[in-house]
Length: 138
Image 1 (cartoon, rainbow, N blue to C red):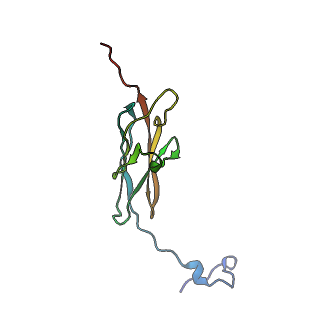
Image 2 (image 1 turned 135 degrees about the horizontal axis):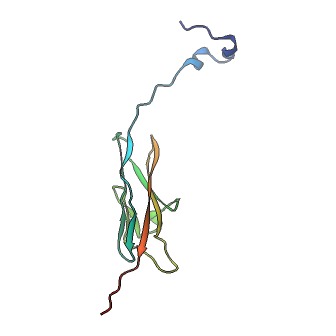
Image 3 (image 1 turned 90 degrees about the horizontal axis):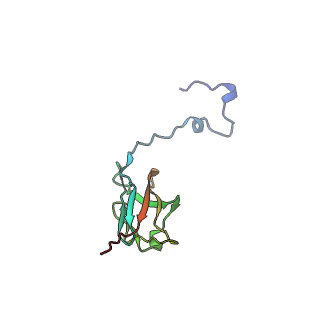
């Protein structure tokens, strides 16, 4: 039998005592981590570029979903056919765009891994810088 509650801690008469003393079972800990995080990259205008990212979980039943942020805002790869998230979570640029007034690819990138049952983790940030194509004179 349980000891009586202190009079100031007694439950209101409308709540059964078992309601206040019932505990939720503890959820087992599931490890969730990045196996690869993005690193700073210097890309060449017009060439492909790759920012690597991969995450793993101890729960095989829950897939890890990878999304990318650029300068703090989530990207929508469907809206830009030059960027695609590969099956391992890496971000591929089929060709980097960079001009004096148009620099859509240059910036700070971050990989965000999500598992529906656990939440999200964010990788380190990585800078994508763009160098112009080198020209040789003959």
